[in-house]
Amino acid sequence: MSLLNILIAPDPTLKQKTKPVVEVDDDVRQLMDDMLETMYEAPGIGLAAPQVGVLKQVLVIDVARQDEPPEPIRMANPEIVWLSDTLVSNSEGCLSLPEQYAEVTRPDRVKVRYLDETGTRQTLEADGLLATCIQHEIDHLSGILFVDHLSALKRNMILRRMAKWKRQQAA
Ligand code: GNR
Ligand code: NI
Image 1 (spheres, rainbow, N blue to C red):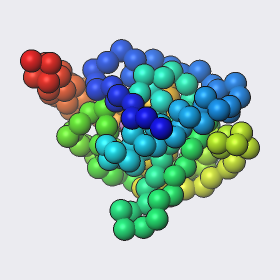
Image 2: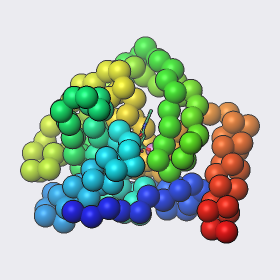
Image 3: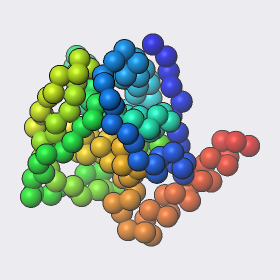
Image 4: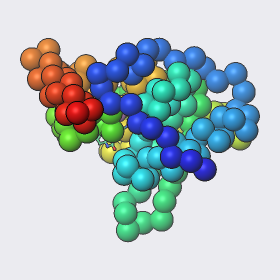
């Protein structure tokens, strides 16, 4: 197990598309475990491979509360197969946009098909925070950040704040 470095926006890698995993092998399982460790340490409720500089369709999620046993979900090649017509607005954050939060409107329920850590095809229907998180993570696999769902004004405000934050971290 090892902690991975989380990329901070603006970063060109976060805007790139990812490639499907050909086979869920030991390397992919290792990546999933390292991503989970990195996510728990952050702490966050989800993490997508591009956020750690890997352009593969891999993500991990755990929306269990701190006082509940962990419920890690590992996904390779996730595909949204159904979105509800009902939309809901939730406050979102992102480990690649530290300390930035905004309301994002998305379908409130989702059905996703993916390969689990054993390479077995799974289907999961989710609502609530899990549905939001699944859509947020799958967006990352297409180079989309939550700020891309906001007006250009709000998006640029957050991205400029991040660029400034990065300059200060570097100095
Ligand atoms: O930790 C995270 N919290 C969160 C809160 C609301 C909606 C989405 C998220 S995902 C985020 C972790 C992250 O950046 N995943 O890509
Ligand atoms: Ni994110």
